[in-house]
Amino acid sequence: MYHHTTSLTSIAPGSGNTSLEKAMFYIFHMLSDWLAVALLLVPNIRAIFKTGMWGDWRAIDPLPQEQEWVRKRKEAKARRSGLIV
Image 1 (spheres, rainbow, N blue to C red):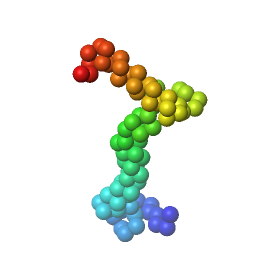
Image 2 (image 1 turned 60 degrees about the vertical axis):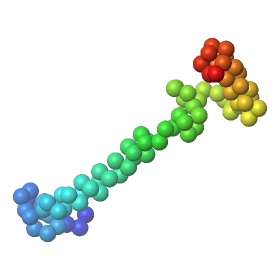
Image 3 (image 1 turned 180 degrees about the horizontal axis):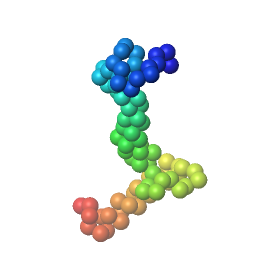
């Protein structure tokens, strides 16, 4: 920290008390926080990684053939119950 001041009400250059200096401080220090929040909340993580409500509890991912079998089974069950025509 190059600049320092002994007065909390000083508006000398480098004191950190001018409006511009305070605005720049909050912009640069809060920008990283807002960026982290956006990266955590904006993307749909469950859709991207195909996990359930409480995460992925399986030890290994199913093979493509198993995924296709499960999809067909769900579709057949939906047809039987009348949800899909």
